[in-house]
Image (cartoon, rainbow, N blue to C red; front, side, top):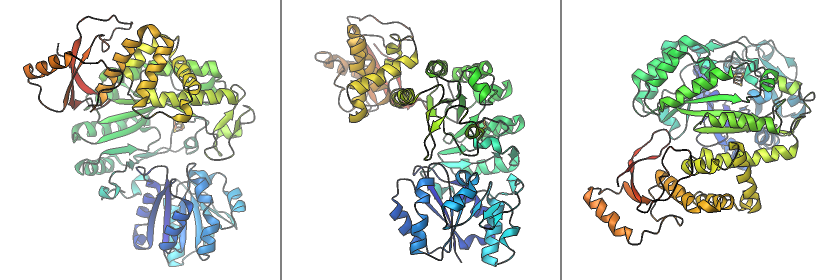
Length: 559
Ligand code: SF4
């Protein structure tokens, strides 16, 4: 008998640690268990054909909001082409509505509820050794009913998943050093798993050392709040600082308001790029935070982020959620501005997902929440925000992705910002401009976005078009060693020869350098519009020295 664990990931670079963990835990049956990974971009027929070729007797799907629709669409066809195959499900998308799913999908034999390692091992024993009965296996539901709840697993008992990280080449390595979250955010399914369990520190260090020795590119900790245990955090971060291989990057989700001096001190000593932090702010409206059971101390959070920012060695990613209770359009604008002021490297503006099994789902009616019936169950409207406003926020989110999170326009945005009373308004106006010019349909390419931003700048401040063109030129060369000059950059004319001469004199020979004249000091820290100079400054961009956090080229004023 052959068992197939199936993961359908959102992108190729992702992998699904859950199926690897189930297989590793059922190690003695490894030869009879296979893993198949696909992405949501694979067509259903392609996945079906591939599953068929693998000739399984039992298929267990790992179900999440991003793959649930696709997976559901496979059941009936699997039963047509492989009628003997038993279908099992597991994962957060199916754990909370298991009874309904069994009614909806007669093809499904059973569902594993909650964490799956031990349950899958016992299921494997049941099918492969034909021992025991399904009724004796805790944490499952079948057509004969639900069995007893499974007690939480000791995390250190799970074998290491990445003895051979080469199998994950070009993909992110997901690592779990703790399971569960001590917090209770009402929209989050992790708040249901009340027991935080840690993997043994010595084991974690040994496994991280293996990944460091193998020089993997990135390790993402899936721990829901990595720093919820101080000793664990200090020990792991100290270990990473001392064993840094100068290459690998580690991603952590943390609660910034509980970061203490000791942890911040360790962070300050790290190589730029060794660690990146994702910090959920979600809203800055006190009523909202109270209602969603988030009791983070906002002032402490801001102070911690400011300290980390000042260290200049940690990439910071801040999250906001639109559509929460008590957050209307104005209040969201305020939340956005406060988070924007913290100058994250990435500002992720997400929309509330009303997840079955969450407290938010139970209270949805009270909040007047209308949300999609399809995964990811995103909010359309609340008592405080109508659908039109949600659509407006979606367009703002798109602009933030293209113009802020791309890090392509940092200099130009600084000047544009001076024309708006809030940063939110800047992106809102840019979104309007996109719609007016149908750019939301004709989506400009990465390079064309520089020109679109210049058009926008000229529309709001026609007096300073030249300055904006210079700021955009600076932004362009800061990131890219362009082969051809941007259309909006200065005509070099006679200055061309001077630049050549300057290169000779300064002995700048490599292809990794570019000299560019600027008539406005657009790189200056000053927060004001600038005046033009007769003779330009010349900046030398050096692409062999890039900032590991922002990937911007090193530059120097050479004349
Ligand atoms: S949102 Fe984050 S902090 Fe809140 S319960 Fe979920 S995992 Fe924990």
